[in-house]
Image 1 (cartoon, rainbow over the protein chains, first blue to last red):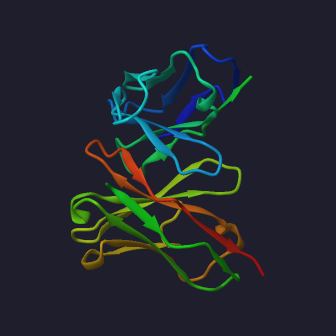
Image 2: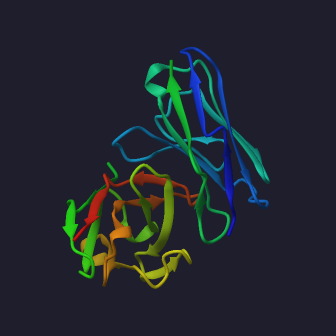
Length: 107
Length: 118
């Protein structure tokens, strides 16, 4: 089973700041890495698919990069509405797995 | 518009059986895999397994294999998650989600809260 490790677990940030969340896979997964945003009491929402492709309707301040074992989700010019928990997910091999999540708090 | 609509919240006792559902609309139901994802209270997302609705072929996470059953009825565009004997530790929110082209989970249901308590 592929283990995904996100960092940090928690981050407190101010609006307009740039945020970087990383996801490291225990073995190479190519580009089969996806990012989701989950706000309290809501279902997760897809932000980035296949490491760097933005999903339809996602604001342009969200971007993804990486391949192999190291991946990054970047949020440029953070907005208050971006307060949420962010998860990475690999679909390279079965079973699919998720990272443990990164909680963003807006100061 | 793609939608996945899940069945309502359930309260059950340990040992009871349960089946929850996920109805797809706005797309060709048999063209996309459906996965089930568990979220225990205050915890992260866990992938449970998936089904190809065109032929009901399934894959399970070893963590859930043998404890749940995933099925689908393509005639009514509905996927199911089923337990034969619930435990208190099954208390969680359960989400269904559709797999996109890259096996990302592009559309999610609203979640079904399952509470198991004596």
